[in-house]
Image (tube, rainbow, N blue to C red; front, side, top):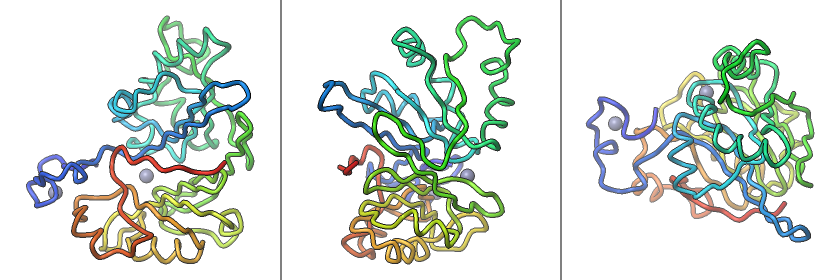
Length: 252
Ligand SMILES: [Zn+2]
Ligand SMILES: [Zn+2]
């Protein structure tokens, strides 16, 4: 929902701490190609705040987008890829959007004027849906599909190099732990302390982080139940609440 949450006047929603202002969750992976000298930018999820986030991080181009699932808070900013997609299509082609079949179906329905072969809207986003594979090689980086559960829905997290991004998770299937072996930097959702039918609690996510053996864990997708300062005070040194604009080095 974002924090402040609309209509709420709780202590976190009215907090003056900038870390208590949370846009909808997303990840930008920037990597420099040392041989060619150019920088690649890969985005995971384009939520309703994508434009604001791209401006804040001074994003100049997007090479690809990976989707975790097709809930509104993870896809509604897709159309704001348009200016980046015009740049990309001049450079070589539409921006690839990696999504599993279920998420692609929703994207196609929601953005019918973009994806329909009958669409003639002249300035539609130059994007193309790419079926998500178990391994998705992009500019030499393997984006590994990590199946996770989001309530009753099977969605995906991603592993790249020594890092993984698991958002909207409520359960991790046993087989997915093998895909997370060796992950040192973990970004994982932790909505609140009170159990929720489709999101894990801080305690549950911390337990998974321990099992995975992450050296550094960042909690994301945080509701207004959790104040930044106060919650971080109660957490171990290697597992903290993330905040908007947080930048973490990873090894690919
Ligand atoms: Zn609130
Ligand atoms: Zn969701």
